Every structure is written in structure tokens, then in C-alpha cells.
Amino acid sequence: MRDLRIYAEACGCRPISYYRDDSGLEVDAVLQRRDGAWIAVEAKLGGGTLVEAGAESLLKLRERIGEPSRLVVVTAVGYAYDRPDGVSVVPITDLAP
Image (cartoon, rainbow, N blue to C red):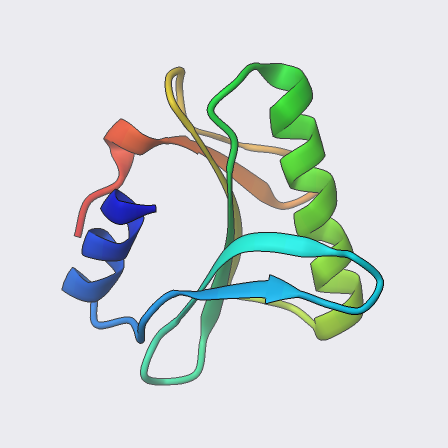
């Protein structure tokens, strides 16, 4: 989260928010640009099962709140790719301002 905060600030985003609603849905970070566009991020440092769980949370958020600019699962290692459901999976090493 520290690295994500640094990159977000360098890109002109507002401070990182955390999302949790009364149904128990949680998302690790919501980044909002000054123009109102927002990105939802789940940090999952484990393997495929955790990435799948993170993507599921992000997709539920999109259903409840509306269309973000991007849905991202940040991982510790691997390659970046876009899933067919619109969720991007990105290793932390690919983040940059």
C-alpha cells in the first residue's frame, strides 16, 4: 500500500481510500484523480486463487457502484495482463508514476 500511495500521489490522485460497505464487501484501495475518474485496487501477493478472489471483489464493487476507469489486482510477481472480465492483473514492479 505504501508503494501504491507513492505512485498515486505522483500521478496526481487524491489520497487513497479504503472501501467497505454494510454487506461486508471490501476493496483495498480506491484511487481518484482530480477529474473524478477512479480506479479500484486489490493487493493480492499470493497465487492465482488470491488473484481470483481479488478480481471477484472488484467486480462486485463495479456492480454496486458503477463503472470505474480501471479495476486492478496488484500482485507480487508475474506478468501484467488483462482478464476477459475487464480486471487488470499487474505486478507491483510494473507500477510507475
